[in-house]
Amino acid sequence: MSVSYLALKIANRAAHGLFPFLLILSLECLSTSQEENGCYGAEALDVSKLQGKRLISLDGCEDTNTYVSSFRSDLVKCEKTLRWESASGAAVQVEVRDVSTNVYQGVPHQEQGNAVKLLARLLRAVSEAGATLRLFALEGGVAENIVQETAAVRFCYEGCSPEKLRALLQETFSQLTQELENPAQAGTLRITEVPAPDRAVTAQDSTSLAGLLYLLPNNLFQAAAGEMTSICNLGVVKLDGESAWALLSTRSRYASAGEELLRRCHTLADLTGFSFSTARRYEGWPYREDSPLRALATFNPVRHTPHLLKNGRKKSPDHLRA
Image (tube, rainbow, N blue to C red; front, side, top):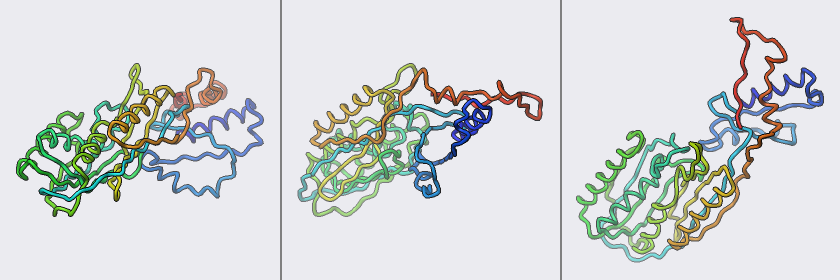
């Protein structure tokens, strides 16, 4: 809605002769939704209906703000070929489901709103209790820029009875929920005994994988004056065949903050024996004090055309920010 409103303001300004060259141009305006949940609006777009050759992409918030600057974003992948061995001990599946994901931006708590980070915290607690873990299945998330609602891990364990393991997992999960802003956002924990496999990832590589997931940054990374500087989302993890990999999406207001976030992920990958690769998802569009686009967007037609609402008060345009 906010993008459409901006288009109307541009058309209004052109109609008053302030931008006469726009009168001979065809202005197309697109408003999409559900982009944070998976770019569903963009995927459903029939681009064959578009005539324009140049796009100005703007972001909106709560139908009242339009942003004419954007964060930089990088795709990060950490991957490792794992060693496997004969499995031993009992086996269990631990699953975190129905996590509330409405917590992505500005949240300092590492596990909040992310099922895999919650699982990593649980695995860490089991290891600290003296149990030996050998993972043989792990999956969570659907895309690097979507927060995870569900994640599950399967592992063999020794040095701990089934009753003690279940009690430890439930107690740790209960403690975690108390740390969150809203305990209901932690979702639910399911613990199920499963048949032991013929083989599993070695204890050493299982520790490396669980440690990487435990330490990788998630949610808020840096902030200044109450505003986000950089954030990170651990979006996908998978134990796939002989290898395991994790995908993350970073966002940063400043290039230096973005590079520091990438260095943090790179260092953690090196320490746990994972390869590290990155690709720019999109470049940042930094804030400008003299932004011509913002000047155009904040044009107030009320000052040029007395337009009255039915109640007799002048109509005030929405605020546009950068």
